[in-house]
Length: 310
Image 1 (cartoon, rainbow, N blue to C red):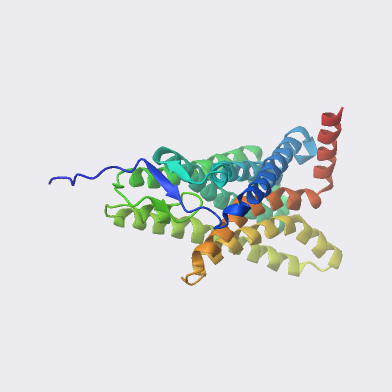
Image 2 (cartoon, helix red, strand yellow):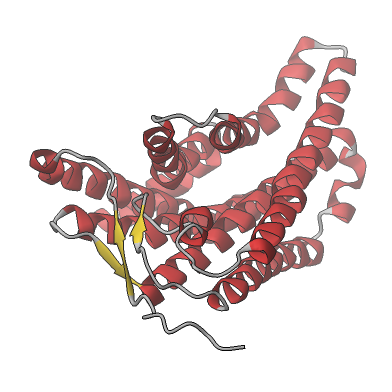
């Protein structure tokens, strides 16, 4: 069978974030400040957990992994977005788009899995406290973290390989401010049936599967807390999982909104706002949420700040 003589696309043109050219400079500085806050806030959490022995617990081991994932996810999107904000023609090379896709999607998948593992950690801590040390030993935590990173990376890698087999012969306008699978597949001049099936399976097993597992963990946690007789005991038990529950709620609320909103003329603008939420706002809030509710984190951060100001 002869292949059609098409010119292969070497770069994509991005629609951009906003249609207000005279505000580009303002948005550049705003998002640069937000990006700096993401990197510094999550890096501070990682360093605090590493240098402060009281934070060498399973929960904070996974929080350090989550902070690293947040930095990766944001760094895969924002630097290129900032570059394009200062340019009239917003472009990204084909290779750059593929790299961005890989890091971004693997980060999202890894974060989903990490939140589920952290929910399981809270389930064991509250529902089976006497077996916590056994079920969440150092070896088990390392194996869980390694599995989470491996599954997230492999899942993204498979979809990237399937994407690379497609032909892109024009048009090359991405109706977003970064590369994501639906917008890229829409530009292909090949059949994307296999890609769509694999994406659907990933959504079912990763998104829905992790959501159901997280919901189950918190259902058992709530039932156990309600069985506690004293109000002080209930408050203490709830405080051990409230930070993680808030982070899970923030993450899934933006993700669910993305998939359940009806298609309309304003849906693209809504998609961009939601994307800003989970690529910038949520990664900023995560370290704040975890640090505000733990005195040991505050102590560790004060140590770091005192050391850096000497």
